[in-house]
Length: 236
Image 1 (cartoon, rainbow, N blue to C red):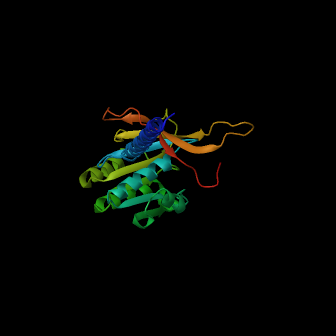
Image 2: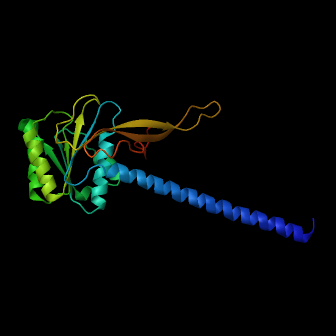
Image 3: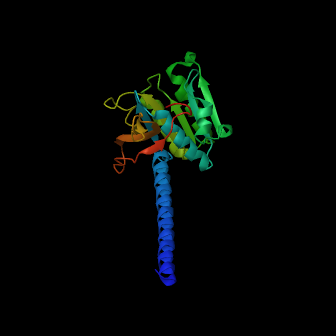
């Protein structure tokens, strides 16, 4: 092959390499946009002025979903609050690893002596102040289905355009908290594994949060795309 032929082949290889690099860049950008879309879909479940119930049991991803909503609210500059029983499951290092600004998150622990009205009452005081863009109530260990407090909380959330998220522990076929719940979802964890190699077991590659919409008064959102997540470092 002459020098001219070598130059042509070399040129073709160079052009092919550039095209391949551009394709990879486009694929990466598309993947980033897709992940961003997934995050947005998950984090925008709670709309201002409405009540969102996040329920589940077993391999549930209720807290993971609520944390994504807290993070989104903080990115929008909102003051956020998390209300739970005094022995609640909130673990600050996990929240921080998920991108939550702990300095901007107000955490309130309610003693059992306050009974079932303790957490709703605390949420009412926070919403009534008009200073909180998001209030999360963890009702996983108690049942409070009275419509009067739901009406007050939803009215205050609508008045101040605040997000109201309620965590409950229940199976999908059970009823929601009440008729004032605008949206109820049931997120679950589904493990992702690497392809099996010769003589080696599959390795965990984190998990996907798959969110099932159980109730939606708007009638528009029926399914949500899965959202990739990982577990704490050191867990397989």
